[in-house]
Image 1 (spheres, rainbow, N blue to C red):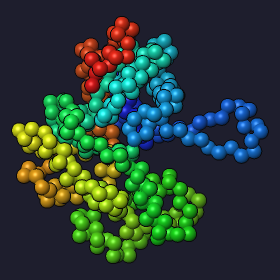
Image 2: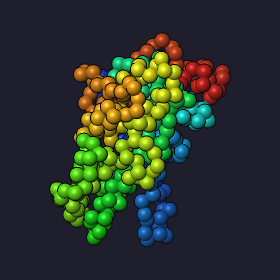
Image 3: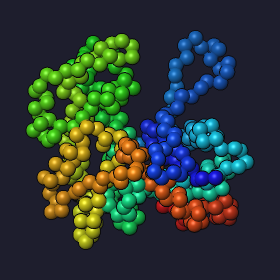
Image 4: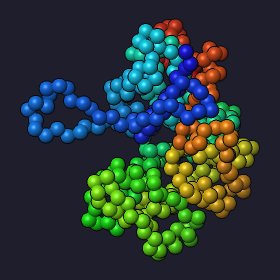
Length: 361
C-alpha cells in the first residue's frame, strides 16, 4: 500500500497516495459543518449552520474536528480499511509547537492505528517539488504568510518569519473595498472569496496601480442570489496590499523586501544560493501579474543580489504553487518509508509521542 500524504491548510486540505508528478486527488475545504444530533433541535424552530475550523492560521486548533476530518479523508476519501491502515506523511507548517507535533503523532498511532508516520516542514517540501534542497520559500496561505530560508534541506528557523495575515485577511479587505462602491449589495465572505479568485490581478508596479485607481473599467458580476455587483479598481487591491502593506493598515515592508531582510540574517556565504532559488507558494501567488510584479520589485530591492524565482519542472502538474508542499511530501514519502526513516508503531509504543522530535522535522 502506497503511503498517504496529507497537507492540512487553514482553507483547504490536500490528500492522496504518494504520486509525485500528479496533483493531489483530494482537495477539500478544511472548514466543516457541525451536524446537530438527531432530536437535539426538536425544541428549536430555527437551526443555524455551525461551522468549525480545525486549522487556524496554519495550526491545528480543534482536535475533535481534525479527527472527524481525517476519519472522512482516510476511510471514505482514500478508502482505507479498518484494521489495514497504512503509512502517513504530514506536511508541517513553520513554527509548529512541539506539543502540536506530539499530539498529531499520538492521534495517528492511537486513533488511526497507522503503521508508520513521518512529517516534514512545508518549506522544505515546496523546494523538493521544484527540484531544490536549498532556497527560500514565500508561502502566502489562507491564514498566514511564511518566509523560510532552507539550506541543505534544513529550515533556518532563526531567520524565518511569519506574518499573521493571509488570504482571509485579503478577502476581508476586498469585501470592504467592494462595499464602498456597491453600498446597496449584501455581500457574504464566501461570495467575496469567489470574486477574489476570479477577478484579482496584480498591477505592473506602484505607478500602474495608482493609474488603475483613476480608471473606470467596470465589470458586472452576478452573485448566486441574483444581485449584481460592479468590480473595477478593487480587483488590484489584493495584489497591491502584498507589496504595500499600508493598504492593510500595517506599517511593514512589502513582501520582496521582507524576503531580503530574512535572508540578510543568514551567513552571507549563502545569500546567493537562497535568493536565486526563491519559490512562491499558495494560490494567491498564481493571480495574473503577481510573478511579474514580484520580479520587478526584486530588481528594485535593497539587496546586492536580486531574488529570482524558480520555475517548476515541465513534468510537474499545473498550478503547482497551490499544492507544492503536498507534491514535495509525495517525493519524500518515496524515500523515507522504503528506507525505514519514519516512526514505526514499535518505536512509538516504546518511546511515546516524543519520538517525533528525534525521527522527524
